[in-house]
Length: 464
Image (tube, rainbow, N blue to C red; front, side):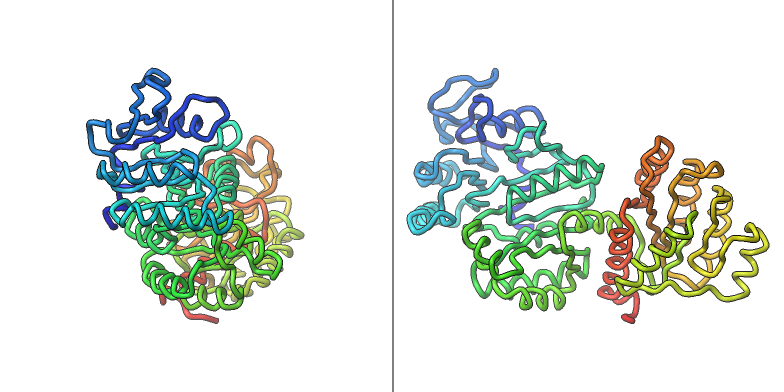
C-alpha cells in the first residue's frame, strides 16, 4: 500500500480543520465521531475557538506540535486552497476534503478544484472533494457526517465498500448494520481530484482484514481510467473477489451522473464488457452486492454448478429450483442408489430426487442425515437449505448441524422468511458460525451464482 493511502485508512493522528460542536452541522458530527471513537490522536482546528467539548482547539494546523497523518477539511470551498497550503507546510500526508462546491457545480468549481490540486503539489494526497470520506470499523475512523440515529454503523467485518456516491454509501451501511452484515471499511471518493477507485482498490487488495470488495461506480472521468481500472481489477480478482454495481446504465441516468460527481457514465455495454474481462462479479443493486459478499467472505468456492436443495416445503422447493436455474446453476436429480439410501431413513412420503422435500414431518435429525449422506458424494457442489423453523420437529439446534457439515468443504447458504423467535435464533447462530442466511430465494440463488462465477474466474471450476 502506498504511504498516502496507508495514512488515509490507518492514520495515527487526525486533524479536523473546521471542527465545531454545533449540533446538526457536518463539522459537528465529524468532530463528535472522531472524539468518541477514533483510537489515534485527535487535533481540533478552528480559529474561532480556543476550546471545544473539553479539548484544546488550534487556530491553524501549523500550530499542532506533533505530526499529522490525516487532515479532515470541513471548511467552505473558497477557503480550501489556503487550508491546503497550510497542510503542505505542516507536512500532512493526506487530506479528506469533505466540502462541496467544486467541479460538480460547474466551471468556477472546476477552477477552484484545480487550484487546490496545484497548491497540494502532490505532497498531500487528497480524497474528494465533495465526499463523506472514510469509515473504518476497526480503528474508529469515521468521517461520515450522518448522525448515528440516522445512520447505524455496521460492525467490523470482512467486506469493504468503495462508493462514488456518499449518500449511497451511507444508506447501504445503515442497511448493512441493521442486518448485522460486517463492513469493516468504506470509502467515498467523491470528485476524485487525486485518489481514485483504482488506488483504493489496490490498497484494499493488500488489506488482510478485507476478504471481499464491493464497488459502487457511476462513471469514470477520463478514458484512460477505464484501462487502469481494468488492469488493477484483473490483479485484485486473483487475490479476492470484487462485486460491482454500475449505476448510470440508461441515457437519462447518465446525465444525472455528470451533475452528481462530474463523472462520465459512458456506454454501459462498454463497462459491462470491461467488468467481465476484469473478472469482477456484477450485480443489479447494492443490497444484493452486500448479501452476495456475505457468501464470498465466508464460504469455500465450489468445484461446479450443481446445487442440492433441501426443503421442509414442497412449494418452496419448486420456487428454489426456479431461482437457482434462472441464474445458470443446475439442480441435478440424484442417482438412484443414493436416493435408495436416503429413502431407508426418511419418511415414505419424502421426495429424494432433488429437491429433497422432507415435508411437514421434517426434523433436525432428518436435515442432518441428508447433509451427512449427500455432501461427501461427488454428485453436488453447493447446498441451498430451506428451513422456516415453523414445524414442531425443527429447533434452532439445526444451526449447529449445518455449521458442522462445513467440514465437507462445500458452500452452504440458508433461506427462511419466518421471523418467530426460534427462527431469529436459528439465523443468528448460523451467521455467527459462518453460514450466510437469506430471506429472499432470488438473493440466495445469486449468492450461489457468485460463488460459482468466482470459482470459474479463479480456475477452480469449469464454465458450463
